Length: 311
Image (tube, rainbow, N blue to C red):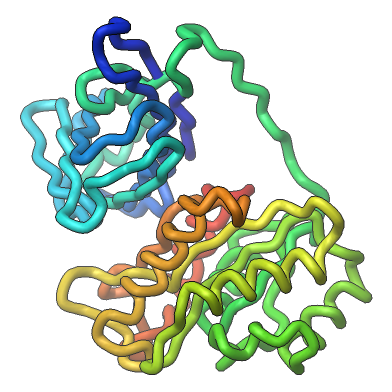
C-alpha cells in the first residue's frame, strides 16, 4: 500500500516551496503497522522542516524515527531531527513510524504539507499528471550488499516479489568487497547476469562491519554497479536496516546502521551520482534473530518494504 503525493506555490515575494512525498505501509499486522515516509524538497533550500498530514481512519502514531512526531486527533506533525533539518533543492530525507489501526481500514493519507504548503510534486504545477510505471519484468533488477541484503531478498521472494533477483550468496560482502569491479563479489553478480541478462535497475545496499565505509568507497560502488548493469540502468541506494531505539547491529558497530543510511542519503543528494534513495528499511525488535539479522517475520517485513520501494 503506497501513495506518492506530488507541491504548491507560495507568492512570489516568498521563497519557492515545493515537495514530493512518498508514503508506504511497509508491514501490517493485527492492531499495528509500520510506515515509511520519503520527503523530497523541490523548492528553495530549507534549514528546518515540518511535514503534516491527516489520517482518515483513526490511525495513531505510537513510535517514530527520523523525525519528532506528534499527533492531535487525526492531524500528524513531523518535525525534522537534529541531523536532517537542512534540505537543499532536490534534497531528500526520510522518516518512519509504527502505528495502530482499527484492523478494518488503513488508508494512506490523501495530502501532505511541507512547512504549511501542500505537496503536489513541484513548485509551479497545481495539477500535475503522474504516470504509473507499471509492473517491471521479472529478475530485471539486481542488487549488491551483504547478508542484510540477502535478508531483504529472501523476504522479497517470500512475499511474491518478482522484479528483483532472489538471494545469490552475498553474505559477508560489505562495502569494501564491491569497490573493485573485478572482485569475487562482482563475479557472483556477473553469474546472475549470465542467467537473467544485464539488469535495468540495481539496488546498492551500503553494508559495513565495524570499520565503516567512506563516501568515496560508496561512489565506487555506484560506478561499478553502472559498469555491470545495462546501459542507463536505474540505481537505487539504501543503508542497512535501522532498528528500534536502543537496538543496533553488533557486526556494524553502535552507529553503523545510521552511518550507512547517512551515506545513502548523501549519495542521493549528490547530483553527480544520479541515484535514488527510496527510504530506509526498518526492523522492529521482535523481527531480529541474533542482534543483527532478520528472523522469518523480519525477512517478510523487509520484503514488503522492498515491494513498497520498487515493486
